[in-house]
Image (cartoon, rainbow, N blue to C red):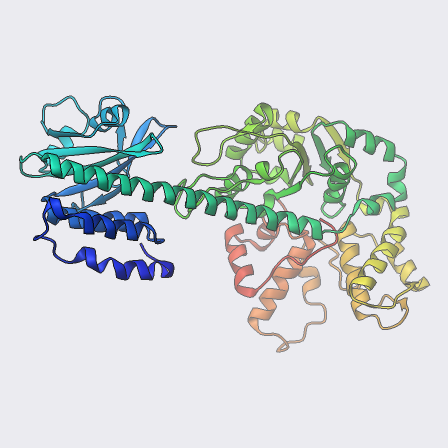
Length: 535
């Protein structure tokens, strides 16, 4: 495994690959110097080990070499590199117990040993190595700053013991390998920390780009009467359940509760449960360890850890699969999580806010949602009424959104026309605030004067949960390609569902597709959730 920065080091390895049969143990200083030069480069330690082992194989007549690194969490040694004996069943990835093994004995004593392998031996390694044709073993501890980190192991198929000079050479080589392993570990740790910080910074940077939406709630006359209750709820560090139809502003209310709480200076992290597949939601919530599954090349923090000391919004929590619900319940009860593939708990201090457009009690009765999780989430319950029940809020929200999009698109718009006001107030707004936002955004984009006029914007808004009712509006045969028609139909369906893909009344259910199939079509057709003012 090599990459471009290692090219110079790879060229310097040719000296090690040349025959060294004429070299004697007494004349190995040049070999050690060459190894030291390679260690000073950025050569991959595993490639370096294979090269050193290849040379030692010719110089000392060895048939197998391996590196066993100690894992204190498991109290085991892991074979992290194997050379000279490809295809071994006890090679890379094999674990050796600390107790009852020759490697463990050398690790504890700090002294190198040379021994004959016995098939009837009580030591863990002897029988499997003997069955693969090995008869002699030399084990040298890898010591860095006085502390052992593992062992360097070499084996022979013949029974000739390693003499004193050969053992001295192996000890000196082991010292060099220990340096390479330690440097590699430090480099990997720094790289992982850098990647993790990069991910966190990227996510938090997206949060800082969001404009404050708390004012949007204060603009609603219907909510002013309960403002004091909302502020009290925000300051009490309890779990909150927010219910309401799609597009009523549940995400805005959740952010307001965070902004009014003592955690306001800490992260506000959102996990959209409806947008994630079952296979992804666990690692998104709890993170994963390196090697937990194929493609997990480094440790990753989940939303729980990102929200540490802050607030986590579980949006559309009713869409969460049952198998993940039990793990979420455990995390809420114990205030700790386990990363996927991890054995040690990670403590988290977060406030959880859940949001859903479903009747969770009905979901519990139907067996789709855990009753114990419902009670855990429903400590404080807040309901956002649909916009049709908050008629007094419509004009205030429309004027605010008009100014927002006028500034965003550099339009010189002062106010709405009387006709536009009348149209807005007469409309029932089945898509709630999100639909109002879509209509205002479209109207601002198409408007040319200082007064916002409302033309066919409301006529083109979906009137029903069935997108087919509005799909053929203005359609002329031959005006669109098949892909354009499919793209338009999917996009309109997503607009109706508030861009909710899976679950009951989600876009996938309406279109008769599996959620993953719909996601694939969206990617193929270039359909992406537009940046919104509302979360």
